[in-house]
Length: 73
Image 1 (cartoon, one colour):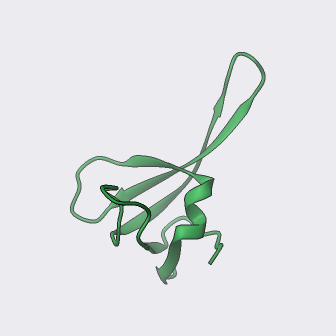
Image 2: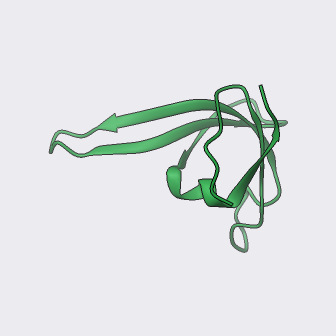
């Protein structure tokens, strides 16, 4: 399912691939975070905080097809 979460949503990742530490995890979606490279390319990433972790992480938009919105903000 391809969804677009809103900041504050609690999202659940499905199985992504063997050994991925996001498999079946819950995370708070913080919001988009764009990287503007010197060569003019803009990379669309998204900031999340996995439940139980102290530090946030970045995911690529391609992972949106592997998550569902568990609780809307």
